Length: 161
Image (cartoon, rainbow, N blue to C red; front, side):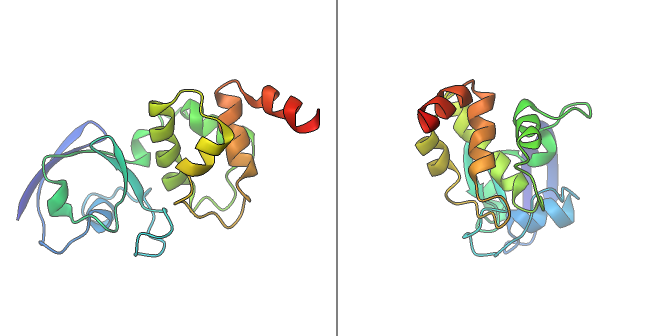
């Protein structure tokens, strides 16, 4: 089956097997290996990409279903070798440890920040609840987003008041 889609602003037209999922299409057919395969069952969030403005688990989406879609992957986040503000905040707060969950986590957070430029702690937690991380304990991730949105000082004052 022939599919046409836009990924990180670039147009692609490829022949795909009707059973091929979007994750394997991105990684194996296009060489966009930033999106990770964790569980393969939509439970861990490592494969999260943004499809037509919504975060999806690419392991659960058939490549054929993405025909005509706009896809954003982690490869589109940095620009000209410079980290995005979100990536930089995660780096500064040591919210990236092994890095396996990071691409999916960033895509979920990117979606959140598009919808709400100043999300509270609970909203951040809800946005990443489908992204499993075994290393950070999530606090550094939440602090990075609060810092990025200018809310970290408020949280610290409340936490220690």
